[in-house]
Image (cartoon, rainbow, N blue to C red; front, top):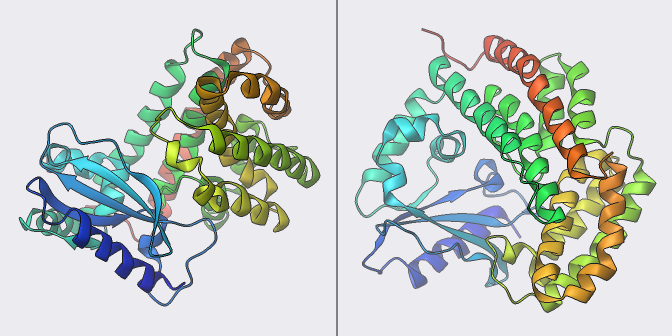
Length: 346
């Protein structure tokens, strides 16, 4: 399916389901598809992300991923109050990136277009790029410093994994690239090559623990992840923020897309999302099928062990390595900002 067709279907969903609600304040596209032209084919592993802005102070939980007229949509609700401070939007690296292009679907108040115009006009200004990089760096630091020894093992692993992965976002933001979630390591590898800093990429992989991961071993882990994923998708009852990511309709994103990456030689770049998905599956199994959780746990443990982690102390130590790495990472981010011809310096 072409991206333009998928966007029209997404617009229809907004029109038919939320546009006429009293609380509706607008909607816009987000995520990896916003930079794709209408005539491009929607890749395997891509959904169409829709942000629905609501006037409610506390927005409802995101609808997550679901099929609508053969298009996989992911709908997230965003409170209007999160957008009222323009400075907060300018410095939030995810929000600013979402508004750098005009991806607005509906804007009944006109404010989203006003905000988008202002974000796009200063998106490439050095001051704001630097502040967005700092926003990403601080997010990584806070995540590492919030590791919880009392949390279940799968939550401990993801508590370390996600802030470790934010190191890639610091560099992607410096390069004015989309801070993508699933493909962050593939994207940052391209950025480092473009700006002649490829020497840093092995260090990012070492922090994640997959620098020496082989294609064969990644495929073995993916095979066990697929079994765990299918089990979790079948028994899931408890609602989590990520629940729609662990469903049969989301399987192409979690499993098929990872297999494609591995076959293309990007097995190390597949590890981040495989590990995140593995941990999320076990969170579901621990809540809804305890015996399955216990039975499948050795395969999760094996992948974590291949990343060099066997205990919470290991997570703490690896987190400290990330914190020690951040000054060097920041130096490279500054070098990229200085070399980026699209960044405006006043």
